[in-house]
Length: 74
Image (tube, rainbow, N blue to C red; front, side):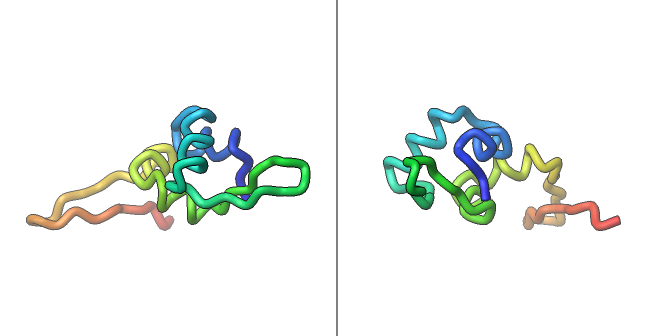
């Protein structure tokens, strides 16, 4: 689970962008008792796919007309 701060770091955006996405319904987050938010990593990747992949070091390689992510599985 991510906090808004760690989610922003992982997605390569600002914390304000994370809060804005939550308010607009673009990013699902669980509001905890203390008023903080918890964000699932998969939800973060769904809402910020290119930013999350870039920060994870994922590159895209072209194969004809198709683009697919290339992960290092070594």
